[in-house]
Amino acid sequence: MRKFIQEWAPQEAVLMALPNNNTDWAYILHEAQLQYARIIETLTKEGVRVVLLCDDIEEAEVLLKNSVIENVTFINIPYNDTWTRDYGPISVIKDDTLRALDFGFNGWGLKFASDKDNLVNLHLSEKFVMLPATYRNERDFVLEGGSIETDGNGTLLTTTKCLCSPNRNGGLSKKEAEEELRHRLGVDHVLFLDYGALEGDDTDSHIDTLARIAPDNTIIFTGCRNIDDPQFEELLKMRAQLSLFRNACGEPFNLIELPLPDAIFDEDGMRLPATYANYLITDNVIFMPTYGQPANDTLAMQTIKIAFPNHKVVGIDCTTLIKQHGSLHCATMQIPVNLFNQAVYDK
Image (cartoon, rainbow, N blue to C red; front, side):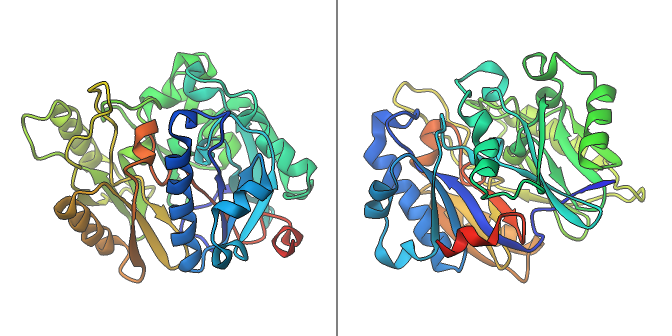
């Protein structure tokens, strides 16, 4: 029996991928690389080791400061883009042993090229970053890390729009999707959000843009208090549905509402899916995306502290990251202790 691991379980690293000319960051490559360097510098300053995928290790080392490099493991592997949350390994425990599940990735429902991304975990196994005994090929089923949340005790939170998408696994019913999640992740209580969407979102309502499970039977969610915002009604319906959800013991969740960032638009006037729910949890620190909005940014950081009182909260400016319709959680994947081959950290 498998057990899907919660994000706040003990970690040893965070997996990221550096923008290069072959990614969608090419049109603002220098700006994008500086954004990633800023994220990596902030993570390592707080004691977090980074495993960094890159196409040119020497170039990557030049980009990062010397004080950072000693806390970064560079891995040369091809990839289409940099959103490791959605194609990185999903961690479960089976028979008291960690397993790295390699699910299929098809560019968020065939929207973008993903042939290289879909092979990243296989390459990590072939390079012994993940030991062969740890790696499990699950690529017959499409599943993105940003689409699922767990409390580590059998409850999984996801969205109907994503998991039942016709361009992922042929358009599963909720019941069919739940059976796959039960079988592959070992969960036994699946909650489907039917509402909630952000303008500019390419992921078909990934749960990590909308609602996140936290310790002590808590759900942190994206709220909207501006009745004139086009997203107001959808997020209001989502809040109402969250209030009806119960955990595996039949108890209601404690709900904590995050503010919605003021609207951010691209150069064509299209709204970008900025959200504070896209934060990263590590052992001692919550890394919160910020968007150059002092009042909202501060409120979001203060709010997250309610759910994680023993964690330090550190903001990272993600105003460049959001230009490609993702944020901090999307660009990172936590690696639990002992999932990767310990020898890779000594290189």
